[in-house]
Image 1 (cartoon, rainbow, N blue to C red):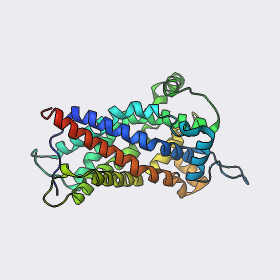
Image 2 (image 1 turned 90 degrees about the horizontal axis):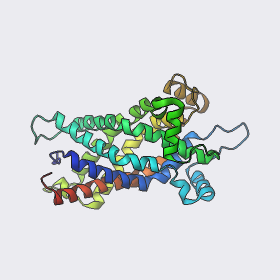
Image 3 (image 1 turned 30 degrees about the vertical axis):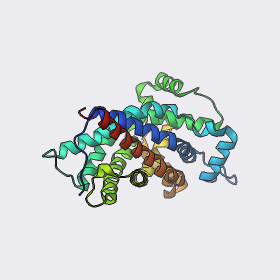
Length: 301
């Protein structure tokens, strides 16, 4: 197996991961908005067409009705959260690798890389869960025509006032169910593709930008292939009125399958997959570029 970067620097991972996260949100947020609106649109009355017939119809209606700003609705919450979240995410992955090494130069197997990635998913949930809750609420309020929240901070204040910290962290278990296995797949796939794409005799640290983009983009697709079903449940649960699902995700799952079938767990699939490649390609390229820059200016940090 090809060389893996050693050792982990928390400070460098913080800044490089944060920069990668900002790149991901900026590239991917418009299609994330489409995904959430498709996942949470109300069930149509008998004889009535659905609010959105699909990804491209939702994109067209959002752009026509709200302009480009509508596609970036609710972006402040993930932007505010991405720097610490991706810092913790990449640091968690690095820590997971270090914990499994007997010696600093040990090369990990792919199952070990998967386990390290799962640890990063646990680390990021504390930041991800409230940010996702606020983002989803802001994304769907524009689609319903109501204006309950004036922005991310106002949404957080109202949620805390109405239900305390539990209201802000509603959907944490589903966020864990989504991010732990998906993060394992994410990082394992990225490392695997980097190793495959590295020419013989070369180091993975010398991989070209197009190859990093390709590896990062495909890693994003593999990540979301695992994450979509729990993500659908999470979006529905986090945007539901208080008390609608007293038994949590089990009630959401039962309702979705009973009313819309198993295929409903893959709502927004097209939007997710269209978004996954460019957004995660941008994330990993941003991370790798930032790490090279930090290694250049502060090599001993």
